[in-house]
Image (tube, rainbow, N blue to C red):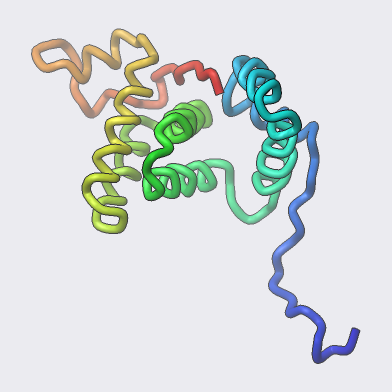
Length: 168
């Protein structure tokens, strides 16, 4: 190939396609329920879950250049902007919490989107996040968000909160 037609060096690396790394990452993000969800999807669309795990969690997520936290913030923004993907957004709210983002940080990401994606989509994202946070069953977190009970909104979603379990 001549230098005139050679692709420019962008400094980017190719995404690996590592099935085992994809399953490991999905288990870290989604918890033990991931395998069951994938099995149900495979019954409906054979091979599709393998493609998701291998190309997304074992490929794109494995690229250097962004920390997992940053990837999750990008996912929250993209899914909120898309709209109509509430189950996936709820999963990524839970994944984000599992890897250390606080409720306050997740909420701030969604609030920050309002001027870019529109108020209705930002509000829809906040509704999804609120429901995902409520699934925790953490009485301290619930009390902190319920008017007239002990605690304050500032303490809700601190690093001490236990992330919710997910069904992937």
